[in-house]
Length: 587
Image (tube, rainbow, N blue to C red):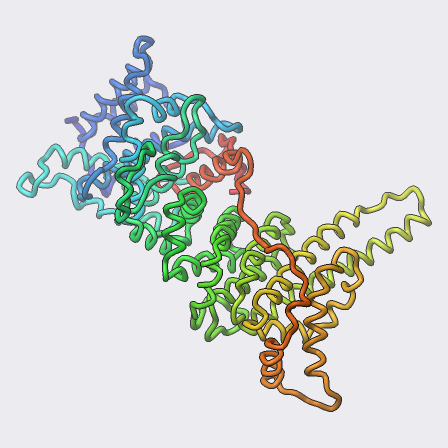
């Protein structure tokens, strides 16, 4: 078993482990190896790894040992109940698979062929697909905390497991301790990631597997498994002919997803399931407690300045996918929330989930206008609002004000760009050789956004005016904003309905010498909504936008997933100078 001995508490300061994990290259003939491998508990692993190394170097091995090792890692992933003694071994198995797949980090282009791809897509590993995906999902769902490092090392035989299990567990736990207490990492893991490392590592491995590129003759089996699994309560699931399908408890999955949305990788998993697994999407949209899922997503968007852009995109696309469903758009206005503590602009003692969603999306648009100026972000925010607009119900007065305030901001920006374009044109006439700034493109973009906002307001007025007196009130209060767009060729058609509504209600509240209170104006609006001649409102096509993944999505998702692995994997380190797949500043 070796001549030298060590203890758990000595591992972080062990000079041999420090040298092993350091930057300095070590020759294969260095006496260091004899000293390192003379420690107890290393005898068995030493022989096994030397055997694998020998077989790997052998020209006649035919890659079989590599396949065997990959196969064993899959088998080590626990397909049953966790014990303290198996936790660390399971974690090492999952982590080893992540390391095997990490060759992608060192290539700028997306790897579509590699040895590990072949092992995972074909042969004996393929038969474990559904079991592995199900196990990784359950690891994530359970969020099991790591047992104390000393709780299962060298357990007496009378306590079960025997000395052999204690030795194997001791090796895994010992290395785990040196990494967590004294080792290095790509970035400091969060408290949640460190307390539940198996859940964290399992989710990262699942995302890696799902985003592997298809083989030339075989679709990605792990993706097939993720997009087709069904609820354990679905009686039709067992007869499904879909390859690699399985059943899982949707209620447990939903609960964990709601609780873990503070992490990028949990949000990415939610996006993947909503977008690609119709069973999960149908189940979630039928839930009566959607606020548990939507509120964490809104909080991500609310703290946009603290999040990386990819996390914000995923959260926004999730909202867009949800708003494609009319039932969702109706139900969110029926959920009343109280005291949203993280919303700091204004005290919201009582507000519907739908109104809060509108507030957060509008805030995201305004942030984007002043900071990042990302057209993609604008488009998705407006698409989500447009999908909801026909089902706006009982909008909170603050939400109604923010809709009109956003239009006011866009109007001012439009006037500013128009003025700059006019001045630039005048200057160019006096200086023929000077380059002319391209204000036409800026003007075109801002007019597209204004058009979309007018369509959103029009959609609400046309379909649910009688449900939204606060929006009509805000519209009347800022009616002067819309004057300049009445005769504008880009907005004339859509302005007809808005102008009709403004004129109709203005005639009812504008009386010389009359000072009406807010309550009285709202009462007049509610009464007038019944008398409004709806037949005179022009019909427009229903606003409906659907999220469509771009061509070659792997060009975005594979670097994104590996940036998450680099930043969030527990006790793993890759030299940032060698990483080619993504740039550090875009993590």
